[in-house]
Amino acid sequence: MTECTGRRDDRPPLAYADVTSPPRAKVYGMGSRLQGKVAIITGASRGLGEYCAVAYGAEGATVAVAARTEKPANEHLPGTIYETAEKVTAAGGEGFPIVCNTADQESVNAMVSTVLERYGRIDVLINNAAILPPGSMTTVKPRHWELEMKVNVSGPFFVIRAVLPTMVGQRSGSIINISSKGADTFHGHYGVSKRALEAMTIAFSSEVADLGIAVNCLKPVGAIETPGMRLGNHDRSLFQGLPPADRYVEAAILLGLLTPDVGTGLIYDDAEVVARWASEPLRSQLAALPMR
Image 1: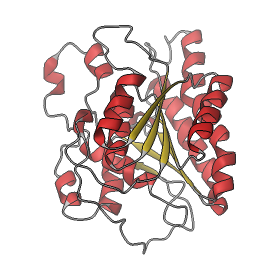
Image 2: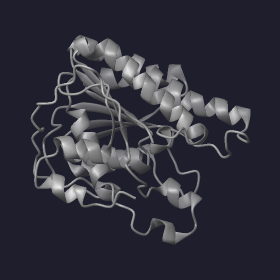
Image 3: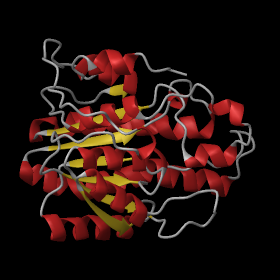
């Protein structure tokens, strides 16, 4: 766990609205903690990005669902930007589907410009888009390595740089980079890319804190079932005992509410975020979930 110096330790917990976050994109309640906020979530056509998008919608946010998938390329890998946007709207927010390839800087800049033209502001960015090519450090193909670094490292850099002028002008904003427990042990090439993302998080946070922008990193404390995980694993026993997405999406909401005086430059897993900022009884309920 990494923290910036000068972080307050006596800060009060953020207020919790009476809402249960959506495991696997199923909304059970609706709050207003993100009412009036505009968020961009990359890689939100399915999986953890989709779960966060729907949870943000349930809290009243407008969510730009930014990803490449307009129609499923594989019947076993469902999810599109349009489907996620519909779920966001159904949850109580406003979903705005927009095609974006985060590895392409021009595509990123066009996406951000379109969001600004439509809504006039950007309050939260979740850099969720990532890929995991096959192979180990000694066997991964060089072209896959280059693509992974472009999507997992350069992509977040492109999007952050694209939204920063707006957030600086607002003197407010929250940027959340999604990492992985693989970064803790440099596990494979994916872990290397996520470790780089964590270092980028700390570097950006130190430069923009005085401008009212918080930059933090979130990682799941354990595995969470997603369509991509199901596609890559045919042994259904692997999914037994996995926690729902509740704790993870609640952590994403709480980080989206942070200001730099409360917390910036933090590398936290979902359990750490919830333990620090969720109010009771939610804190205890989510703490009871498995951490596998």
